[in-house]
Image (cartoon, rainbow, N blue to C red; front, side):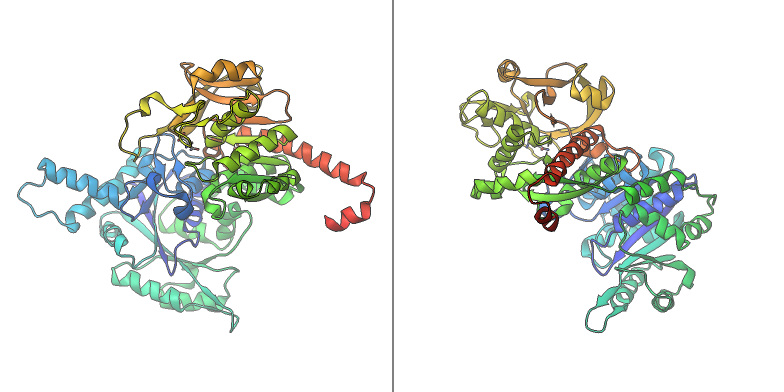
Length: 549
Ligand code: GLN
């Protein structure tokens, strides 16, 4: 029988519940358990696809084309197991199902209510995750904080499951560091516990989130208020890399504690995970990478890209210094482009819409003409085609019809099947499909295979009417869909590293298995970093260089 671990949150959101849930999963998976996850997002959207990443963070795309919460990315990066759309549940999905059943007449004669109809549907969806791959344990992370109105039916369903299944409740809440008295305050944590109990949930385990390890006193105090033994209270403090978190919690005894509570085998094998963390500790050569995008002010918008850079870099012994660059800046003042000169590699981020797009084109032009290693992703690839068409083919005003519907040269245009589509939710070209790589190309060398599978999320593509012109001016189309009708990868031969891809490589990178295009970018960036430092050392004024470094 599957077991269910519920993770609830208190005080504020964004305390790293996702990485704590992923760590719990890791702790059980190194003990041989088959673990699956469910992220519950109590908002009314059916999925994350229609939300602005600037507000909610990145939209994470699963193999089966789900547009989901970014926490699913953490589950995959920690465990390496592909998630599906089933692993993310929202209020919108629950109501859509219940209401369509009501219209169908499935509840004929009944008054349809939150309890039991909505809570039954929630429980059905939680159990469906266990059935998906025959999981031994499902970690159910309830998004937001306890007390949120939207969350109530989910907490209620979880409470009911306590009687029906084998469950364990883990409450994660912030312990506040109070600047003026220089101490950790537990009052808000206590209030969140009271709120949880008011709903009828008594936690089995508590995790205090704080900047540094909590003292035995704080632990004792939390245990007292939580009606728990002190052994059931743990601390998630700031660690780097975040992949160290399961080890830190393991050292505190959390792994043993939950394995025993759930009656699971308890002989963990951490060897391969420890190797990952050691790579981070050893990585030392600095390499500067810019992520050029428009949601640059919120780091969570590009979390998968950032993590993928790190995964790749540490396997090469490199320590990336990542900066987020807002491309609108270049539109306001083209001189700011010079800023890119100090980077060893550039990523042109995915995106939608007009804002910052011209700035991205400027950044691409800079990278192409100055020989800076560049990886363009999705929108980044499309704008690279526009840049090339304008500046190499001389097609002035060439653009994507997404940005300029009246462009004289629509080098990027809607996918044929997208024409006439009215509804915008979940209707892009989504999910994983095969990409066939050209033998002898850079992509082929990097991937070491003629065929790969990668995830997609787009409506536009390279317009077939411009294929010949682009090719004859030097663009190498090195990746296609299986039927050969769509371009997936483009590269340039006479450039240190110029690779632009229609798919999203960042969703295929995990801590234990970096994605090849990122490895290629970092490798090339390290060469540039080496050249840059070499030119510094032969500089006329080495002392000044040293000081400025
Ligand atoms: N806006 C572009 C499209 O829809 C690119 C999307 C993306 O970068 N994910 O095709």
